[in-house]
Amino acid sequence: MTAPETTPIIAASLNPAQQQVLDLLGAPPEARPTFSPTLRDTLLADIDDGLRELLDELDPADPLFASKHALSTVHSCEARHVAERDIPFEWSVPLARGTVAHKAIELSIHWRGRPDPLQLVDESLARLAEGTDGLGDWLAGCSEVDRAEVRALANERVATFLECFPPIRAAWIPVTEGRLRAEVLGGRVVFSGRTDLALGRPEGSTARKVVIDLKTGGFSAAHLDDLRFYALIETLRLGTPPRLLASYYLDAGRAQPEAVTEGLLRAAAARAVDGVRALHELSVGTRAPVARAGVSCRWCPALASCQVGQVHLGRSEDTSPFDAD
Image (cartoon, rainbow, N blue to C red; front, side):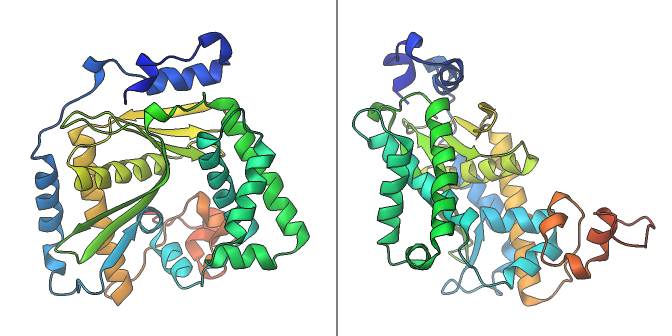
């Protein structure tokens, strides 16, 4: 990324949270790592070797899609993953809020002058309502109460983003809602994702890109795994990884950064391989899903019939120990 260190914003115009983001994004040339040009081939070979047993079971014409969410749920609790997989997707206020807010943040980056959060949200609602996808239909048919709630919640998120982030310059090559895709095992498996915000681009084998996930709420170790998965896809796509990953917690005005290394990418590849195996086996029914207790038990659709979750939440008379692994 060419910008923060070469085209500085006047520090006096930034609040401390914005200055911290600017300091995080900037990096002198010596802090930008260079990776081997054979790294992508090495990772692809490791992944294909780890999934070789699935060669005859998967069809390139009907590939297995491994998304960030699918890998996250199957690694945390297989029983929850299966329960959610069988529920038809429906738009709701929380889901619509996130999409509207991300669209408004995208507009804010390219907006002339000082953007007003609510104006950005209203423009986003108007654009998305005109769409031909499910969200457009939902916005067109939802109640005024639901629409007002989406507007209020999205406005809060956008206003918080504008408070926490410095003005993002075009020279930083910003990309919002960037789609990522990488095919492995001869196209039989597809890794897919979508980054909230990416800044910069690689220069040859030198890493310069920063990938940022915007979060509400608190830290979770799963957030690190999500970003590492994005870094893996980026490397499989381009051959050069991002320089830095960061979960940014808007409520707290704090970032959780992590530098990308070859070891991180190899670990992400191994996790992806394990996840794909589990996704396939659960899909074809060659293994029974394992229930693992955790925070998500509170809203799991399988809770009513899950003894592990009920014991974890103290809702069962069975207080005997159980294996949460």
